[in-house]
Structure formats: structure tokens, C-alpha cells
Length: 202
Image (cartoon, rainbow, N blue to C red; front, side, top):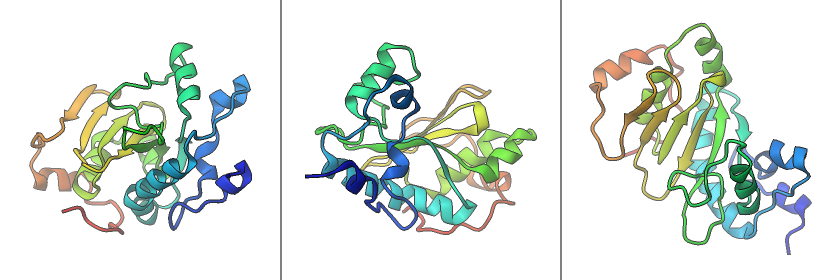
């Protein structure tokens, strides 16, 4: 049996613990719990997510700020039904519910402060988007105007789809599609980024 205290102390990766992903502003404001229905499944997928995606990001850019992490199915449903910026539980790109039995996914909405400062001074969000595409085996990334926050998701089969609510809005690259910009052009965008620290995707 898991206690909430024990669950929060579970170390998912070198840099992240489960507690960082359990806080929910929706849950806090509305007095709703945000606890996995299947803690073991949530931990396993959260561990894959953090080790594969978040650790390399933090080791490359410094501290990663988690804005919205794990959501229980009940909490996410409440958020969707009440217009609180939560996708439907059955939406194909929903990534916050880590413990749905038949949906292998884990994700979070994060901010990279190192890049957010540059974005605040007018830097193109696509510089970071193409860096992600060329360095990490993510499933989907979805960018938002505030702080250049973005959802990033782990799945066993990383399709590397990128969408954005920042202009130019829409899909930057579809799953399995060739990028619209060649590699050398993409690399010029992020030539001043810190050296990558992590395992390059195949």
C-alpha cells in the first residue's frame, strides 16, 4: 500500500521526484485529490518520461520548472468538464494521465527558464522546438504563449510531433513527417544553445 508521503518521495530519475508532479492548482483550488489510481503504473511511466526527456533537458539548460505534471483521471475529467484547459481523458494527445491501463504515456507542461528569458525578448519559439526535434525522442510537444511553456510527452514509440498556440500557430511537424526546414537550417537556429548533455536519439 502506498501512502501519499511515500509516493511523493519516490525518485523517478536523477533529477526528479514524484512529488514535483503531484501538485495541481485545479486540485488545490477546488479541494480535489490528485492521486494515481495505479501508483506503480504511474511511477513506471513517469520514470521513463523523466529519464528519457526531462533529465537531458535539465542537464543541458539548468533547472526545469514543472507547471502541470501528473493528473488523475478524475481530476483531468473535472478540468475538462469545467473549462479549465484540460483535454478530454480520451483525447489522443492527452499526456497528463500516466496510469490509464491501455494508454502508455507520461508527460507534463514545463518551462525552461533559460529559454523563457530569451523568448520574453522576442526569440522565436521554433528555435527551441527544432532543438527538441533534433535531440530528444519525445512523442509530442505543444507550445503555449505564456513563458513559452510546452507540453512534452513520452510514449514507447516517439513520433516527434510539434504543435503550437504561438504564431505561426498550428502543426510545425506531423508525426512521421519530414521537417519543413533542413537540418543545417535548423541547427543555425540553436547554434548558441548550451552543449547537449544526454543520449542522442537514433
